[in-house]
Length: 285
Ligand SMILES: [Mg+2]
Image: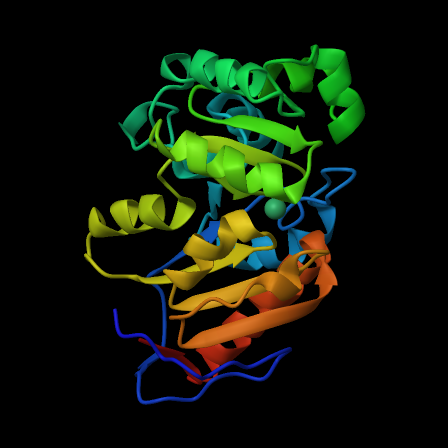
């Protein structure tokens, strides 16, 4: 996909370039959950309901692309009635709408978690993560119920952690885990230890399997672990957050930055896109 460099727009201002004007569906909507479709603290999606209803009217169900586990996402889908394929654990795996795994991109964490812990001990590094904490601690850190925190612990590909050491030691840690084919990725609350994969790669994998083959892609996210998703989309919605100013996706023909965080921003972003689409002003690569 061509990259439109040097073309950054903010708020509701939209990039105008020599791309094709999108006039109708089909399009796919990929979205982050925490801090995007869901409130960062309460996990409510209420404020996004008007946009979700309008998307449903057009036959579009958002595809969740989250750092959450498959079990957590299935629970969110059940509670919201938004059943669709989904991307879990930062892009580690893709599931279909019935909850069957379709593909995985991540190295299973059972293969590397012990090595990471040994490294922590050997270098006397200070960090702790989901595998160190009881569910009650995760519940306290995330605002999830203890039951939901238990689902969050059922991780297959990623280890979310809190870094409690110096930045210099973080760089040392990153270079050491590279030798284990691992990396780190920053989300809204935690830093994920994982192998090399991301939400954007998983989205492109899913897109390539669609018929018609290239519907255009709308992506919404609020944190650095969403950057690959936003960058690989035709239309990116950067949801306002404490970290959204760091996000500068290179690639989308249209970038919308919301002034509101969470589902209220999500609602506004989708509304703007649909207005552009309906007035034939939405340009895609
Ligand atoms: Mg987020």
